[in-house]
Amino acid sequence: MWRSAIAAAALLGGLVGPAGAAGPEKAAEPPAGRWQVMRTQAGLVKLDSATGRMSLCRDESGGLVCTLVPDDRDALLAEIDDLTRRNRMLADRVAELERRAAPGAPAAPSAREPLLSPEDQARIDRFMGLAGEALRRFKGLAEELRDEWDPPPDRT
Image 1 (cartoon, rainbow, N blue to C red):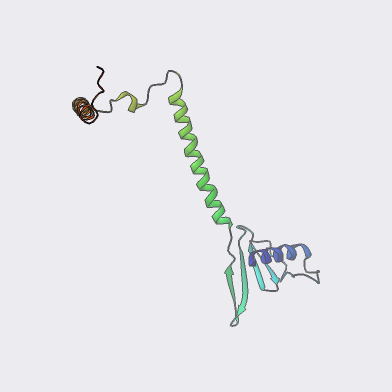
Image 2: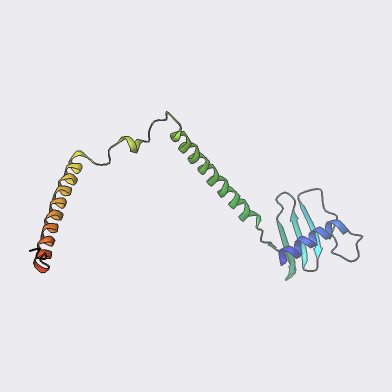
């Protein structure tokens, strides 16, 4: 709320000028330099024309105390920088994937290298042989049990 009130006061102060009787008035003719000061109902608004930052100033204990008005600009700039970095990273990744997928492109390094060493492949082959033998034995036992519990019908 303060931000919009201060922005409106700054805008009206710049548009109405010292001759405006109904709105905020300029405290003094702004110097040609960096800072502009405008009077508002809440106190003074100090605008840094180089950065766009505004401060709200109040007279407290005989001195002028200024506090920086929160600005979403820094957060938005940081978000833009982050998105730009991520976009660049993704564009590089897409270019790399397209280069790999191009006809005649060398295969990815992981596709050329075997996943298992010869010793590991031999172990897996041995295990698969043992597992196949165990399943065949289990099937034989299941058939024997079925024949014991449910003998075939007599056909004589």
